[in-house]
Image 1 (cartoon, protein in one colour):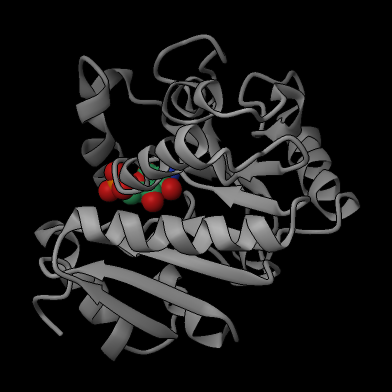
Image 2: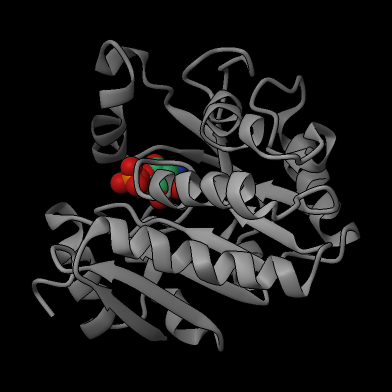
Length: 241
Ligand code: GLP
């Protein structure tokens, strides 16, 4: 794993965005894996700014999001569909039918997991996957204990994750209890991975990732086994290294 330390969240966002843009420039048909949460929003802002200024085009790009809540309609402002449209898709020239997110309202959710996994593979797999990290080490919504060989699946959210994400909802009760997430093996199949880590609240998780053992109890630790991972961390997140 290569670690890039930056002095601020803004610099983290700029540096990661610059690398993403260079991957898009060298492959107009890049399959780009995307994440939600607060951390990647700065990168998305940079991508939008660059698209407006420099006309970087996403017309042939396909995107694949990591996860989606179960039981939340796409049009609901709490859905990750909505989040991605607001924070990225509506501001660049990507055709919406080339943006892919698991459907958390599918009638048959198990079937939806299989479909999504196969769909990614049929598209040739993910070239570059953007990841954030949960305080408990989750990647996507793969909570501690998720097997490393897991593919896209249904997961029960940890209480700590529901609490952390309750800031986006009116109350904790409204936070869904389940989600569909790409599995650990699905994420590891990506050719390249960028992990974005920002803020004091992630310092312990980053220290555990860098210094701790590879264990299913700390899902992000699996990234040590991937040949092409770059971690972008700001000073606050890197404070315990
Ligand atoms: C969410 C998402 C993850 C994200 C994580 C951290 O639960 N499912 O993909 O990486 O939480 O989010 P944040 O960047 O807001 O700290």
